[in-house]
Image 1 (cartoon, rainbow, N blue to C red):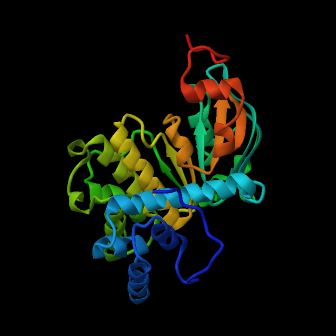
Image 2: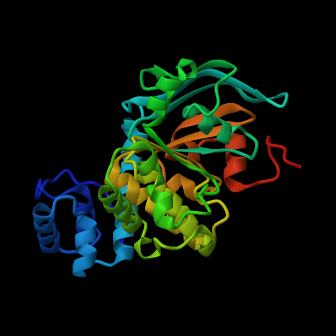
Image 3: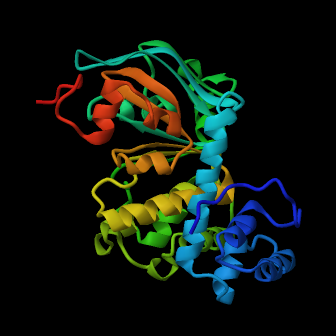
Length: 336
């Protein structure tokens, strides 16, 4: 199938980009898309792709491929002229952090674009997880400032910091599920702790998120009954259930086989295209990660080696970046 490129024609202004893309890829006819859109209008909140799959017009594989192609089309636009126009949501100014006598963050300047997927990459020990923790105020800089919107969170009172943190959800590297709670209660936990919702309202929201990650039937299972990929999906459902503005993901595919890793990346892509959250995640899935984000930050020895559109970073002629992308032992990064 040829790559999708956005067309300037507007055969039907009511057809969203995903519908146009699926038609252009020859996955589905325009009539089927229009029928699915009619279903959407009768059932608020229903998704176009969901309707097309349930009707048998396309397969789930074709839908996921279409979602990925839509993200790739956005990457092209972002790389060409979108990066300069993207508003900044999270900003670091000359941030330094010393842990156990080692300078983990060495005066970094960083800008995370709003409403985009940003990936942070780099060798182990380069400061990636510490950077994520500064974004949500779990750590404070020894020097410098961290901004979330108009709030300098490195200088907020505890009460105001808690208010800002409600804009975030965090998916920890290991999932951090409660062993004593089943899947349903793990996902429901932040709603019960932080919202006045009734149990019926909580049930509906949890079931919606478990359906989204294809785990509704596993709500009564406990974490020790789940595979690594299922644990990641439950953790993602819990991160989504509060409908956050910003999602931070620390190694969402760590320890997974290539097939499950690919499935998690598709799930993150699907989540983003549904919601348009600002998403920031750490990843070692190189070079695959370049296909799954708009913006890229390369950290090395506590400094920002490069930052910008993912396509531009991938094509960089910086020898350290190319060494990391291709996993070469020879180069400016010394590991052994």
